[in-house]
Image (cartoon, rainbow, N blue to C red; front, side, top):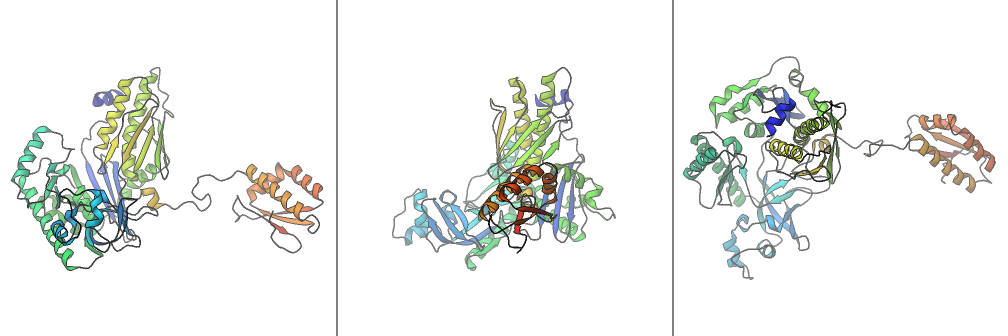
Length: 525
């Protein structure tokens, strides 16, 4: 139904191919852009100063247990201890194993471990293997889990979980059956499990065998270090952006990887050769003088994508506001006034908005609760078309997402996994002028506040001070001279004093300074 509606409205359907990975590697920053038919669909940035720890595995030490929070805090070598909820702690991750805990502890542990047993299994001072599931955001430390998972090219190895499965995003029944047979033939060590990733669809069995072998080698090294090293210690570091790009994005659908840094090109070719030697040819070295992101039109698209207001092809637009608690998206028809068929115009705008919202969530790496206010649609069929399109577009998102149908108020509620800070929070600082509010007081408001302060100061110092020097921003001074001059003269008459004004372009528009013109001492109201 979605494809028919989109075709009817002239919207793009499935990609016709032409996917490219553009990699810009500089000394301070590495950037990766995924282009589909020239359109920016994914954008990732990693800076030298940023330390991406999501996915990294540590040998930590339990510092303290908070029964009220049902959590413990674990030292993994950072300034702030990591947060581990009881439900994220499984006994198998304990370095000595649960059976040894049963033998050595005075308290009898039941066969089935529950949250209330965790403090006994992990007393303060005990060592524990953990994986970072969420990086530090704002004032909060990292969040960790003992449910270890190690992603490879085609498989995810779960050393402490014997369950095996196939990515839900592979929905073809025949392909799922084929992959299940491959899964059953893999020699997986007892007690471990694997999940076939989405990129595994259509791949040959030997690719999975090779991937599993590499993952098991990594796991053997981790186990050795777990026994040999003292906590806190990093057992496994999540690969950098270059390596993650090869692992997560270089699929059969990608025509080429173009990178402007020769060492990075050679490294990617070496990594690819371990799994698919013939894919080396797709990784190309860019040597032209024109900057690689300018050559492929990435910079312009990035600039447009991060505006608060994002225009849609139909002439409508969406407005994205990011707050600490949630992200709100407002959909507007804008210039898309349409013709006589108003409902068609609204549906077209909402469909394009749904497509763009899913894209923006990936580009900006925004997470948490997202609420989209679509234009009201009377037809339940139209509402369902927008909802289904959103679900379809979210399938390509590597972060976990959940979306609800459009409510009676025309709102669509979504959640997106937030593993790290959004692009906005990591690349921008709050404006020192408006202090992150996005607004400053207008000149009328400041005129009222200044007059209020003058009344207070002159009332208090009516006997001792005869002239007050007022230092203000030029914008405010212009308002005082052109519109509020009579009010200031009235203040002078009322208190028998004199006011003199001096503009200061460096002074914040929301600030003013009152001083004794004779002594120069600053006055407080």
